[in-house]
Amino acid sequence: MAPEPRADTVVQVERLERRFGDFRAVAGISFSVRQGEIFGFLGPNGAGKSTTIRMLCGLLAPTGGSGYVAGFDIVKETEKIKSRIGYMSQKFSLYDELTVEENIDFYSGIYRLPKNKKKERKDWVLQMAGLQEHRKTQTRDLSGGWKQRLALGCAVLHEPPILFLDEPTSGVDPNSRRLFWDLIYDMA
Image (cartoon, rainbow, N blue to C red; front, side, top):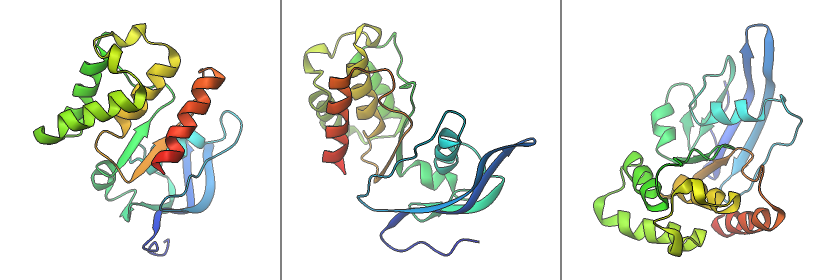
């Protein structure tokens, strides 16, 4: 069992493992991440990066080891974890048939934002993503970089203290990639 995390530690794992039958996708990794730190996984396809993120988000149970996110056990307290994190997958999880505003409204509902915060947070996302003039545009009509920034805004609508990004710059142009990482550094 992992020791209880330090007060400034937001993610801590000890010998975390995930097997799918005989295949060992995550092989006993250990690490910790402190508040305000930007931490990343590097490795080839199939190395277990996305699987690890899914375990930390409470979306997939580990088959071994232990871990804490925001001080909560990743096996026993997944619902508490989910309310304290933002998650942006490499596929962006946006609804193409909805407008920019409708996607933001949808995620506001998912995160149960109080009515008095919805407009403030929507305005923030539109400004942060540079989408004020495209608020009525269907998401399918946005460029890859704009979709990426909209997805980021939706992932942080509820102002989570921890944000998980799974290959967030995959498939976007170099300028959009740089702008995206500038936004991440500003948030950290």
